[in-house]
Image (cartoon, rainbow, N blue to C red; front, side, top):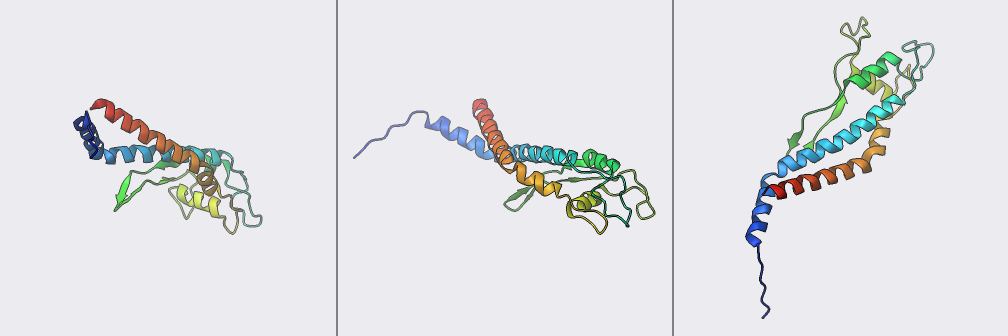
Length: 162
C-alpha cells in the first residue's frame, strides 16, 4: 500500500479557514472593482452621446439630450451599496438626483434617472441612443478580468497575513 506524507498541512488548513471566513469581503471587493470598470465605461459612453440643444421641441425629434442634461448624467452616476439576495450579490450602477432644468412637471429639476431612460430607450420626441447597453457590452470582458484580478489580489494579501 502507498504511503503519503505531508508537511505543513496544518498551516495550509489554517490559511483555507482564514480565506473561508473572509469570503464575503473578498467577493465584495471583486464586485466593486468590476462595477468600477463598468461605471467608467458608462461615463465614456455618456461623453460620446450626441447632444441637441433643441431638446423637448415636439415638432422635431431631437437626436439626444441637451448639453446640460448630459453633464447632469455624468455628475449623478454612481455605484449603489452591495446587497446580498440569497446566493446572489448585487450592486447597481445608476443615476441619482436631479438636474437643474426646472419645469412645471419637475419643480425640483428633471430626475437624472428619467433623462437616462429617455436617452437609452428614446421617446416620442427624442431618438434613442442606447449608451448603457453599449457600455455594458463593451466592458463585460474587462469587468470579469478586473474581478478575477481583485480576487487573486485579496487572496494573496490574506494568505501573506496569516
